[in-house]
Image (cartoon, rainbow, N blue to C red; front, side):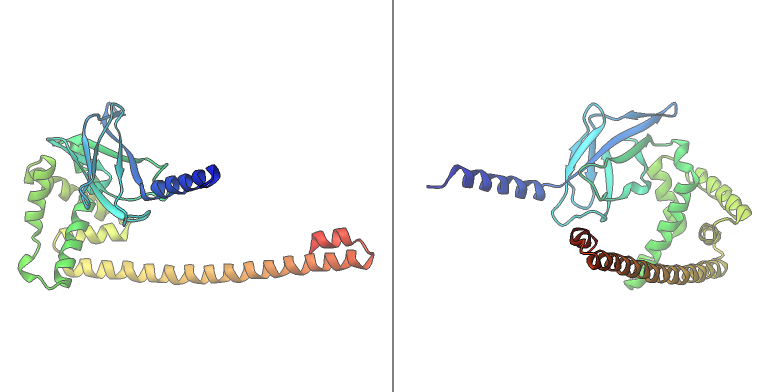
Length: 262
């Protein structure tokens, strides 16, 4: 006969196994009204890659079961089923599964289509960046017939967020001028130059950015290596001193203190 202890143990193992397989993405869906975050209730949030979904409760919270092959650090994208609304943040609904996804809330903020907040600098930068990456991907897989066209991309983006193409072009030109005047971020300057179709100049800017990043990476690697060597030296000093302490107490037959030091 199986003992009560054995049954309890098997039950515990079953519960633990079930809980490990049931991993969830916890989040909250909000919008902005008068600069205050307001929860959005009864709205479906979807993980696009798996089509798994959940409807938000009265406080905007949702909980979506993760597919077994998704782990912390994986990049996913989400969308919402709410007509004439779009995701403001995270940009394009793209996010990384948090390390402590059972405890950490994913925050999704949506706005009505046509909100001027969609024409912010970070959204325009993401627009050009995505166009560049998509174009590069198509060339890498040798699909010349599927060539991306920037004006078409702008039109699609404008339609998605509820603007006219002229609205987007106007704000894009404004962003380009501001980026060129600041010259604070070389990467953003490269994006702005590419958006102006000055491709040769943009290529040179991206090349300089890459070279600078390579140099910084080399310096950082050396610093890490030096830090590792320094730590190893500290460890050696610690060990030597504790050993010498133990030997010192051993000489006067204070074996209790010698054992502690060892």
